Length: 111
Length: 132
Image (tube, rainbow over all chains, first blue to last red):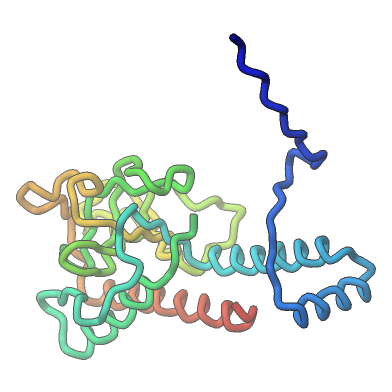
């Protein structure tokens, strides 16, 4: 006995370079975005995509100032109390470096 | 690992940021008992046609020699890695000296901390300006 072949799903015609995502927005915000998109002679999808691309570009710009590569499993933040003190550091030197290390540690992985 | 140390580290590459990379000398900015922030160094000279980036400090042959390094090198305080203190990343950590080549004198440590502090400030200002 043969099993009937499952009906194959039709793959929607989309550019292979793009993926579809579902975006849920509250109605007021969606209406506002739609109005802005229309004013700019764009579709809402194009407007949202452009806004996201702009945001990525800004983040890339910030990442170019400092690149942080984080090993897998390393904590994302540390508290000032965890920072190890150097053997010959004065209180003031340690305080400055401790603040720097805590600030550096907060920089997210640039990958 | 003492802050200000130049240490042997398998610094990750941008291509494979999650894996140990080739052996480099890293500069230790500091950290905790279990992990540290290390800045990248390379003996590759800075490209002559490129303006020096804000986080770059060049070390001449004599400055390098004072830090037990045989060639001039550049330190990139703008290229950092957060790494656990394990042999996976620090191959000599189990040995005497822990792979530390030299420790920067106080004056140099202060200078390098100033560069890193300015970079952090610039990054924060940029993020704020961009509304991120």
